[in-house]
Length: 77
Image 1 (cartoon, rainbow, N blue to C red):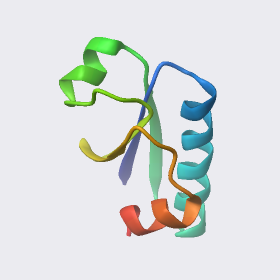
Image 2 (image 1 turned 120 degrees about the vertical axis):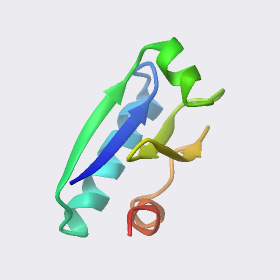
Image 3 (image 1 turned 30 degrees about the vertical axis):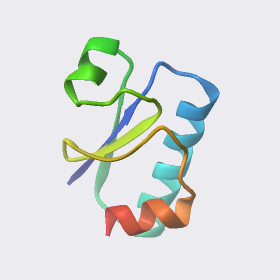
């Protein structure tokens, strides 16, 4: 199972990233779990300075922007 982590405080961009990540995982027929991380200290532990950020299995893939569903599919594959 892939663990998709959305790092952000809950702003509209964070919510859009979560929606896009879920859509990408569904389109790829992945077995996945989405975890939302809003604690700023925990976000900083990932080394992320700009949110929103997307991590897969604890590895930060992108930060500071909201990638498209197609871009996320590439990151998850």
